Image (cartoon, rainbow over the protein chains, first blue to last red):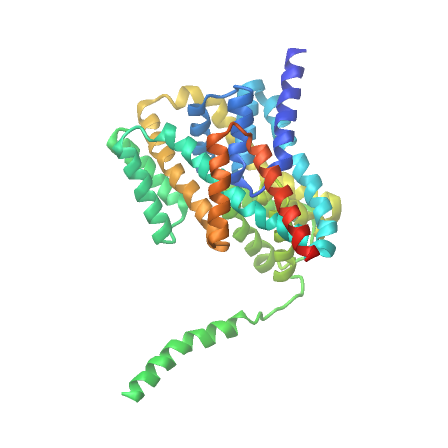
Length: 177
Length: 211
């Protein structure tokens, strides 16, 4: 019985996130965080930040990875399934409907206005999320240095983020962060 | 002198001419391989298994696989589906897999696309979650993870920068600052911020349409 309640909570938490998770990946994280860390208290901020780091190193969409991980931690494999399915259902419905509507309404001012307004909101969400991660991640000058060096490399060279992540893990071990 | 300038100009133009010629596809639209549901699953399984870094890293690979390798979709058809996939909420890779699968093979195709994309990531995360507490408290692993954590900040700033670069302008900066101030100063949930942005955008669109 208890397990069923937990599974229901997991499903509906991620189901509600699914409807507003515009922008994909990074932009979904603050919304997941507000549900999983702030509202439900399923993970601490530190655990959530570790989870983001893990999602970056493993293949697949970051939001799916996060849902799977949280679901497993709370209620084992059934939890992982219900959280992941919950997250995927709303986008499936919305993109099916959009696919039918888009061709006719793509150029209407309302759709254009909504798309234009979403962009700055997504940027703000991602930056806000970056600030939350930074509060946990930046424990000293060395960690800030790693982040700044990583950003410079990512912006200046076309290097794949994976190599920057691998290098940062190496730097973490070498510097004893 | 003029000769040298002309030669430089010639040199500069040479690769550009070649590349624009190369862009004219040799085999335009003919589907190279027959579309099948198992084939769709395998394609998206491969993309899901080998792409690290989430949605924006997966999209170019999906395009390459479907347009160039399999020849299932024309470039412009893929871009149209991609636009819908990005406008809808949800992971972009999953949305794109769904739409492409549906376009090519109906509902079974859509299922094959979505399941193919998430099977491997789902399994790997399950394994990590199962051994998380044992493994991640090893000192070396903890140090490595601390390094990755700081670079995650850099990755997020980069993601924000990428969206900004596509729509840079004073209005974007002001609106972003406004949303950021709301997020930092109030306890408003990100839900409401997204919904507020959608409503404000729709209202602005209606207003602009009336004028």
